[in-house]
Image: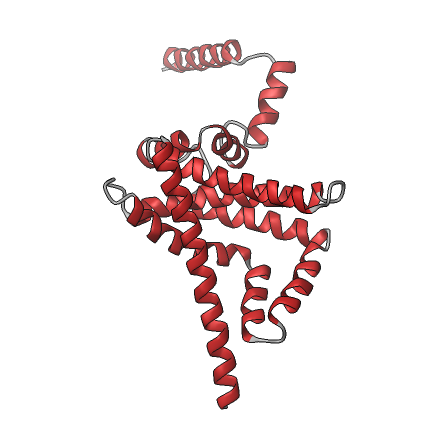
Length: 240
């Protein structure tokens, strides 16, 4: 019995010795790797942002078909990116300027209230907008086998990445503020969305063009419905 205990003790010591041998040394390389893991460079939010910037179609295909643990979940990613945008614009007080622009454009109306809600709730508004863009995308790419939910995943990632781009605008605008810069910046975001969606469906000029058209129609449909709801609110208020 005593020999058996000694045998087990020796095995445990050998295992510990093997673990000590296998553990890598804590050095500069180890510290850099730990830091990258901490900020999510290889997995998580930053990994998702990086891959969506470099190879969106490939990353989303990988998420749908291979591994769903390497990157941030799509709806979570969209909401997080929308929150980042809201925090930055709120801190820089850019949203106040937008509210003034909305009042000039729509006056004291239901439409203004709807647009103001969109301004203050980008996370939820983007999900609603996504529904219309997904429907148009499904129509334009109907020959592909992706269902509406998979297209929704695609758009969550792409629109989330777009919100991060939007977050840069008020920061850069502190140094560069003119109409040409705004036009170029927003056009770049729109072209990114078209490129990313088109790449997901195989690339090619035709797919990029269809993606751009689907995105614009989805956004336009959302705007039209928002205006209709605002007008309906005003009509109901007058009748009551």
